[in-house]
Length: 548
Image 1 (spheres, rainbow, N blue to C red):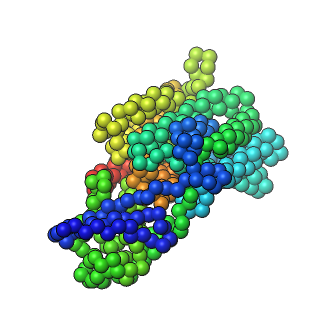
Image 2: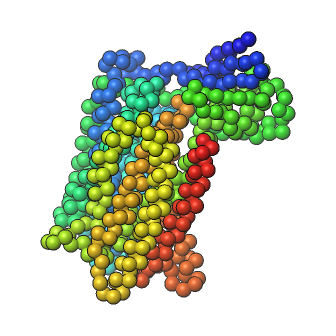
Image 3: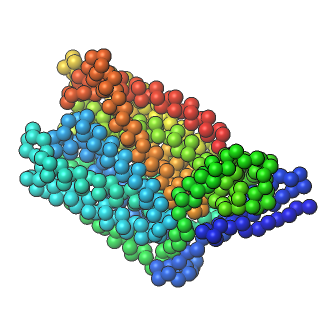
C-alpha cells in the first residue's frame, strides 16, 4: 500500500511544497515539487503569457548584456595600464588594485542575488545597480578628463586624487556586481522554467553576449584608449552604459516579473543548520513532528539524482519547527558548495590575463609591419573562436556528455593548468631574451591568452548553467551568483599568493614579484606555482564532481 502525503509547506514559503510517499519497506521517497512561480506585469497584475515574457523579452537582456560587459571589460582589461601610466602606481600595486577591484565586483554579486531572491524583482535590482554603476563610471570619467585630478609625471597620487579614484572604482565594482546577477536572472524569468533546454539555450546565448562585449572591448575600446585617450574611453563607456539602461527600460511593457520569495533564504539555511546542530545527539529512532524517523531514509528526485547526502540535516526536523522543504533547500544549496570551492583556484589563474600578462606584453615587441598591437587585444582570436563555438555548443550540448556543465567546468580547470605551464615557459624565454638585449615578439603570449580564453568561456558558461539549474527555486539568483563569487575569490586569492610569494622569496633573497622592472622579477616561478596548485585543485574537483 502506498500512502501519499501532499504539500508539506512552511509558513514563510507557502509556494514551495514537497510530496512524500512511503512504500511497503518503510523507506521514504522525497520528490520535490515546485508550484508555478507567480509572475506579474509592470503594474502588479497577473502576467499574460501571450503578452508578457517569452523569447523576445529574454533576447533583449542579451542585447543589454553586450553593452554591460563591454563597459566592464573595456575598463577592467586596461586598468593596469591606466593605474601605471596615468596614476603612477607600481606594476605590482597596479596588478593588486585590479585583482581587488575584480574580486570586489564579483564578490558583491551575492548581495545582488540575495536582493533578487528576497527583496526586489530582478528588474528593480537591475535599475538600482545600474544607477550605482553609472555613478562610478562618471567619477572615473571626470578624473580622466581633468589633469588636476590626476598626479603629475612620476608623482604618486595625493590623498584627494586617490579618494576620487577609489570611490569611482568601487562604486563601479558594486554596480557591476548587481548587474551580473540581475540581468541573467531577469532574462531567465521570461522563459518557462519547466523547459530545461530553453533555459540552457538562453544561458548559452547570454554567454555569447558576454563574449561579444569582450570582443568589442578588446578591439574598439582598446584602440580608443591607446590612440585617443582615457578621457574619451570613459566618456564612451558612460554613454554605452546609459544607452543600455534605456534599452532595458523600453522592454517594460512586455516583461514579466517574478515576485520575490517570502522570507530570507539565508536565514532559513542558518536556522536549519542550527536546529540540526542542536539535535546532533538525538537518537536516529526518535520520532519527528512529521511522523517519520531520521533514518532509514532513501530520497530520490524526479531527475533521478539522490538526496541521500548530508543526512545529518534530517535531525533539524525533530520537534516539528522546521519544514521538510527548508531542509531540502539547505541540502541542495550545501551540495553545490564543493563544486563552487573547486573552481576558485582556476579563476586565480584567469586573473593573470588582466594583470601580469598585460605587463608582460608591454615589455615585448608588439609591432606587426607598421601597426602596433595592443597587448589587451591578444585575446581577440580566442574570443572569435569562442563566439563561433557557443552556437555549436548550444546545438550539440544535449547530445554529448562532454558538453554538460560539470564536464565543461572540469575541462576549463585542466586548461588553466596547461595555460600556466605555457605562461611560465614563455616568461622564462622572454626574460632570458631581455637579458641578452633581445625583445621577444608579443605573439609568444598568444598561447596563454588562447588557453585562458577557452578556459574562461567553458567554465563561466558551465558554472552559470550548473548553479542556476541545480539551485532551489527560492535561491536561483543567489546560486547563480556563486559563479561570480568564484571569480571574485580567485582574484583575491591571486593577491594573497602574490603577497605570500614575495614574503617567502624575500627571506631567501630577492622577491619574485618585487620592484618595478619585470625583467628582474621571477614571474615564471609564480606562474609555475599557480600551475602546480591548480593541478592539485583539478584532482580535488574530479573527486567532488564524481560524488555529485
